[in-house]
Amino acid sequence: MTDEPELSLAVTRGEPTPEELAAVIAVLSETYAAEVHDAKSADKPEPSEWMRTRRQMRSPLRRDLGFGSWAR
Image (cartoon, rainbow, N blue to C red; front, side, top):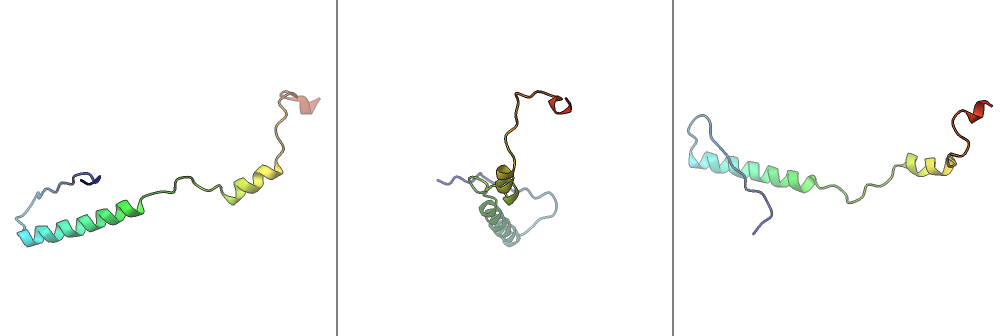
């Protein structure tokens, strides 16, 4: 039993031969499998260089001063 969803293919024009259908299915299946394999993302993204250095430069906000206290 696989975890892959069931794929469907519908021919809307023309009458392809069984060999042509087999070729299309083989190409689409391989392309789909490659896309699924490449689409997996990392579990936790690494912080950027900017985020790593920015935290060290900035001091915490002083909420006890209140808005506009710098103008007094």
